[in-house]
Length: 88
Image (cartoon, rainbow, N blue to C red):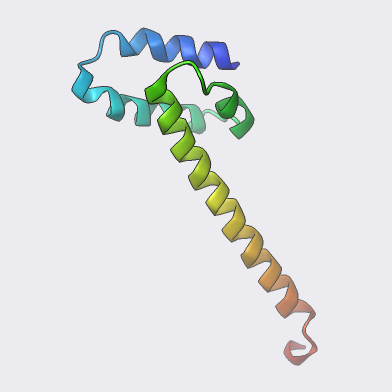
């Protein structure tokens, strides 16, 4: 799926949803995209088509980046512990 398809599907559904429910729909849409394997690169490419979708995509990307950073730190710590002679 490319960024145009992501935006087109979003815009189609957004037109028919009560304004109060758009944010909830957007969150579910982003979750659905993630569940079906959309990459961070594809999600970043979809930014710029719609303000609501942009905000939600940015939040997800920031959370992903934070998670990746935390995982790198944990991996680095585990590697250091593994290589520390005190633990052999």
